[in-house]
Length: 293
Image (tube, rainbow, N blue to C red; front, side, top):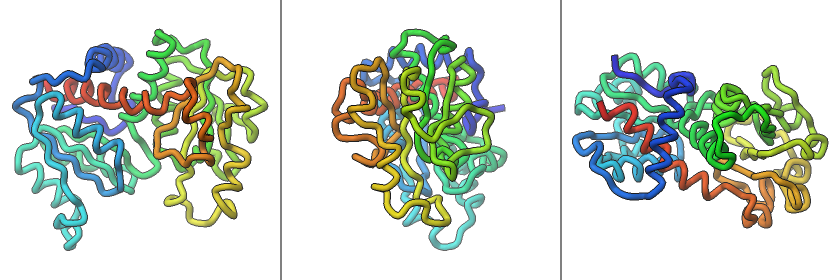
């Protein structure tokens, strides 16, 4: 049975480490013909810049053919069901279909009906496995270890509505990290983890800050009068991290001066652009893992 990546739990710890070892090699940005006989279809039902481009570049660097489906011009906009769209695409014999959808569970459902490998590029507020993996890769690469048991990681922001947070938390805990949630009460998920409403209470113990974008598109009611109000309490600033041995990450897109200040974005402590670079290498390794054999 062909394996799919719909959740971070679809990969064992040993598989993740092997993927990371391959990703380390792929950081050289060289083209390879590893997947020269493969076809990969990207179908994104939500907007994306980094993830869609990252998957396309990753596939092309491995020699695969790539088709990007424009959903606004596809038959789904004419009333075709998602199931029929997937079945029609699968009939064209792609090796993998990379899918993003606003509804949780869609990639998992599709994986039961198609022959191609399904790779989840984000489903609602549920999971974003490849972002979680590239975040974990960035952290383990920075500390040069897969044992994160003595590392403390603060996830800051709209955690309840974040698929990235779900993937990050599962992976970070599996690799031993100590995770603390920093969020206002209405963004606090139902998870058995320590939390605080003020990052200053824990900053002295933190090795990594993962800041998250406020998921305004998933809010049913206004939670703040403005994003500036939110940023006043949860923005990561130069004053907060200056002089501390802490790195700052963000999955993007970054709301500048709301999630992260300009000074933090431009700081050597920021890993935001390194995450983007690492993302291509990790997705190359993921595609190779699922499609090479």
